[in-house]
Image 1 (cartoon, rainbow, N blue to C red):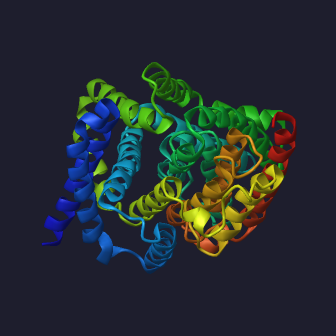
Image 2 (cartoon, rainbow, N blue to C red):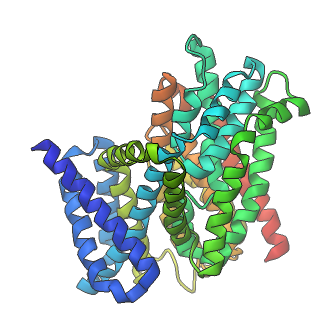
Length: 441
């Protein structure tokens, strides 16, 4: 019976995934099918509800209260279905990343990169693993940890495992500042628009460079340009693959006038199909791994979907105005928006509030004229907060996954050096963006 329910859940997710792809390609022409997929997604949520963790249920309860306050009697059948259709693309993103992660694990270039990282000396490992985590994280998110942890020698003591885990985590989560493959990017894009989201990526590359350089200096015992070169050399086998992936997504977005999220959902399965043709012997393994990954997808998917529904409601109703958070009387200063957004997201994460909740609230308040801030800079501050928040929360999927694979306690990983690092990343990042905003806006 349990196996049947799991298969049904995977089937419902696959239906929502297909509907999202068709929605990107055909738009309103497939609205009827999209509505059917929305109902299927609702059934999926009902089926996974008994399996959710207690902390996820707490977050869902908070989201439900927030949604009830925002709706305030304005909910209609049309609003329910339109918000459901809006959420389908986020479901497709998570499914697409599951497929991409399974594919990356079979690639020879990825295995060669693992071997290169395993040969790094302990003195260079922190810098190397952070840079590798950043590059891999920009494409496959939490799948990074499975790849990098496999490169750690089996006889590593607890100190080296913690050092490696912290570096991999810092690298992976902070790739959110420029990567369109994170849910956080999709969340922000919904508030600031596609053009500003892409512009924020340019700022993100600068943010990532400065943060990585600062951490390499701070955490490496023997920091030098040679250390950086050695670390980058480890990534040579996958360098062109990363360029091809990013160029493909960007090309789809420009040529077909797609959002970054839609471009990812369309481009990545096509790239996976090319891998199927190159290595047909891996096809069954990739499909099975992807199916198993979808079968385990529940907590994050439900939370993200609910948060996106709330964000959609916040944009398409006057709920925030009714409770006095936005309106003609409340145009907040730009520096406040740019500093408060990442810092609040980071601090909220420490006490277990998922960044998808805090970011939805902050962006709803400060975007669309709510603050005297350039939308691209607001987007970047949100992405900094996303990275800082997922780095410092024991409830973060990134922290939990990284701690499990490196065999260290999640509290030691999130609440030690990375806690201070995350706070400084959020605070200094926000201050820097506010200075840039004074020049641009």
